[in-house]
Amino acid sequence: MKYFSFSIAALLAAVFLTGSLFTTTAFAKASVGKASIYWQGRVTANGEAYNKLGMTAAHRTLPFGTLVRVTHLRNGKQVVVRINDRGPFIRGRIIDLSLGAGRRIGLTKRIGVSRVRLEVIGRSKTKRRRKRR
Image (tube, rainbow, N blue to C red; front, side, top):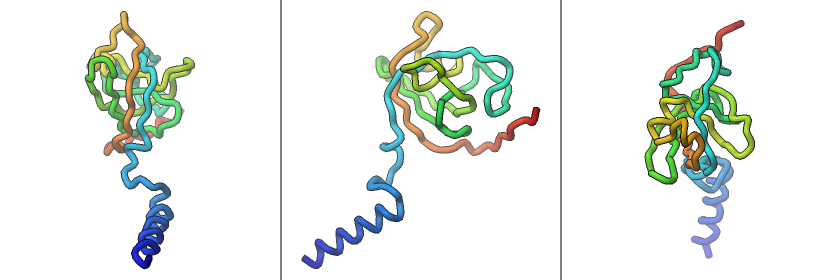
């Protein structure tokens, strides 16, 4: 009985300190949905110049600089992208990939939308400042 009460106390302390039952947050931050390739204007939402061949993406809620592993569910190809823009603004899609990132996992202009799995893997090490307008 002593061991049982100690393990419950340890579990409650872990939940209180970490905020969840899982110590790894990658499990909690994985999602499945549709991805598309997007073409954007000159400047992204965080102030960077848009690079269509870069490994970047747009997401509605993830903070700028978040690194996300995108896995194409049909062919298993993966790419790591950095969130630097907001979107997609089309219902049913969870991420917009730059042309370079889309090509790397097999999305093309002909097949522009496909099911993917997103896994948050961390934050970018580079500090990017938003340009003042």
